[in-house]
Length: 625
Ligand code: ADP
Image: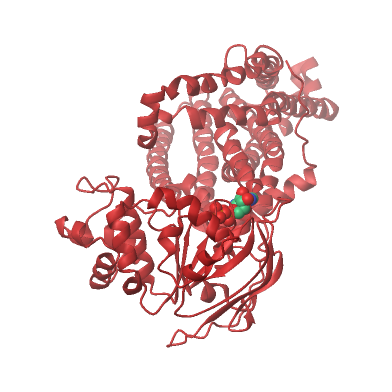
């Protein structure tokens, strides 16, 4: 077995701080959930003592005066109290369950919200995804992380209450003296003996959970290894469920290679895996030892309580009360120690959760409002802009200088990897330039309110996504959208004919996830819907990244033909590696290896026989003409 370095435990102080932080975070978001759980816990911790106390009274009465009236009254009270307690318990549990419904997903939402709020640059960073994936695996594999905090706080409150109740019912076990007539058993009255008994009880009470924690720590310390196995299973184990893989799976029998990867998880969870070895070795030993110590403890309690009863310190009725309350007392101390240990084990996982939740948003957010210009009189300028992706040594863009005005049609062309999409991402402020500055009407775009600035752009990225909502909701990106406008935009984008075939028009669901009557659409149709979405937003700048890549030649020609009409008075930036599709733009920017190498109209650029445009045009011409 390969020895791995243990995940370092945090100090108790650090563990306490991070658990408290997690509690505050969860409580602020879901206070009702905590209140209902805690009230339930208080109720569940205290009510058993009513039963313990009443049955002790009953046994006592039975073993002494056996007065039928007293007995009848006691039985009635016992039954009534049991009924009332059960009723109230059911009510409280229902309340708690209602409050906690979907708790797992509520906790997940904390992460989703963070992802939505973080700078795009962090979203794009693989480190962020690794972190999130580890957090997920910690949760799915061992139940470690934020969600565990809820149960742990509940367990702590429960244990403290049970402990207090246990102490209250146990004190007299030690204080009631054995009568002098008991002879040598009067040693049970000796304070030193009492202290020794309490000490032994506490020691044993500590040892059982400590051993159990030790067993549990093997899982926590090897989280990385079951994370990997879970990750493999999470991906390869469910491939059959995904419709999008179904065709390739069949043609290439990808299930065979996937199965191979999937089965490598048996290295971790199989009978020869690391956890099986632990189970045969230390985990098994510590768990068994912990159970044995608990049984020895119960035996010890029986001996002590029975001895005192035998010696005459109290009646036989109290024996059950003391045994039950000492056992509960001990289990509450065990639970307290166990939960504290668990919270400490969980602390390093929580630390990672907060590392993720506290990823800083470093993008400068100005507060200058973007002027709403009715004549869409905007001018954008890239001034000596260079850009490196985070973690990359290469420049994706180098010293780009360019200006364009509202109402213009700009085509950005170049080979794959020449920097076209990066240029758009900078323009839309998904990233800030590494060097240089981008100006909107002469002002650095970082000075503007971020959301205001984003509102200027409608973009169809190459990897756009549509939802399984209605067609109209996809176009309007709203639950209640303007139906007429959505229709108009769809027709403009070339979706008119298809729209006419749909019985429910814009109310038709896309895909079948939410409606049996949903329609499946082709890649080209999806692209038209995405185009309609950009038109619906009605932003002054419209950016189309390879918008006709999935269209058939006729539909493509149609889009070009209507391009001016589609775009109207907006500024259009059109990206393509297919030069023929950009000919209709009077302003073409040519990118090559991250640099803007040429700019002009098709005629101007193709006249320069040494230029990149000429080279690309001629290289592609043979396929298109
Ligand atoms: P184009 O759109 O012209 O095909 P891109 O702008 O996508 O080109 O890419 C320009 C360069 O930046 C390429 O070398 C590409 O590998 C690199 N690049 C693109 N996206 C990332 C990223 N997220 N991280 C690191 N490098 C990237």
